[in-house]
Amino acid sequence: MMNEHVLHLVVFLISALVVTICVVVHYEALRFLSRTVGIHVHKRIGVLIVMLGLLLAHILEIIIFALGYLLIQHGIGWGHISGIDEGGFLDFIYYSSVVYTTVGFGDLVPVGMIRILTAAEGLSGLSMITWSASFTFLAMQRFWPHPLTKSDHDARD
Image (cartoon, rainbow, N blue to C red):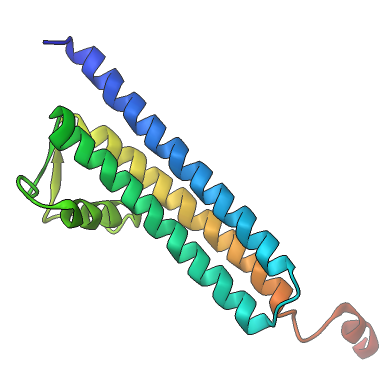
């Protein structure tokens, strides 16, 4: 059997690969949405496109992490999620969504080296959600400008 340090390194590399894939997916989603809402669309349609696009990106990222958990638990067997011993893929998606959104877990607990991916997903999910919030803020500023523009302020003063 491999040295435990080597096993940790392999799981760390798998985690780094999953995180990298998710960052690229998120970047490309934001880039696509930025270009799409750059086209002259009605503000309601633009807001819907941004929100639905971001939700879709987050769901895809959660699924990518779920595949990582599935690989580590069933593929190479270097850790498991207590409560998902014989569960299906939807159980891994549920676990991934709880970790990604940093809601926390209680019914499912990572055991062994799979904890490395869990920690990476918590940090990544928090980062992706805040990145999306920043993007949404900028998009909303574009679609719904503040009612008092600078010229309105100047006229009042």
